[in-house]
Length: 283
Image (cartoon, rainbow, N blue to C red; front, top):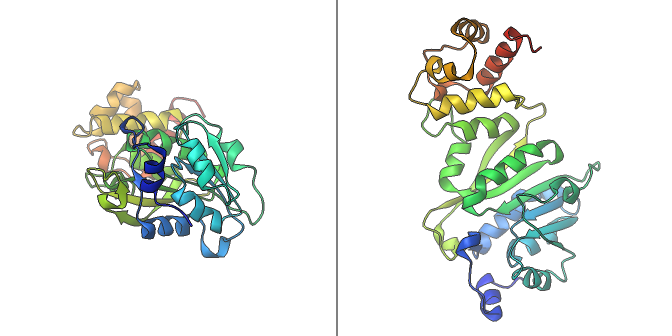
């Protein structure tokens, strides 16, 4: 039986580290829901899971009951021996590493028919952005990504164009993934309770992706939202193309330069990037 993280930490004389952004899941219903989102019922015994920030193993052991194999990444070297002990009977491979730099492709393993690969984790809020970026980089290596994030981030990931939540992060993630909100978790689901609510999101790779994240695509998206109160004409004028090229590209892409960035969907940014490439002679 999986032990409560509070008991594991207490017995080891440890406390959650603020520097690592540690908030340990203690609500069993939330843990079970995450495990079910990671390994669907028809995948039990077949899926391979890489868990980021495994902590004391409360989610890890649940995953191990459903998955064919689990690799648990933990950066805190004081937690690693506890994690190894708590998961000793579950057949889990524990890796001491930083999820921002570890070779995720190697840990996920190669594609195998009927053996979906899943990336999951209860993410430290301070590094949610970099870890979402890593997930996007490996979208073609996984069947799904299941992350616990700050509720505000979940709202942004599932937002629609034309809303205040729609932003650069939304566009980049939605270019590669379909986003589903799995559940919301109150502060009391964690030890220690964070000051904000959290949510679990499931990211399913789109094949093909809605947009290719080229240099022009990234530049257009970032510029549009760095100056989101400005029209696209003003926001994009800093990118280099003269006004005539910008006007021609917008016309070809069906984009109004009098609009603002939050009104454009992913495909509009993709069309604009493609039009600029064509008019600049790069295609």
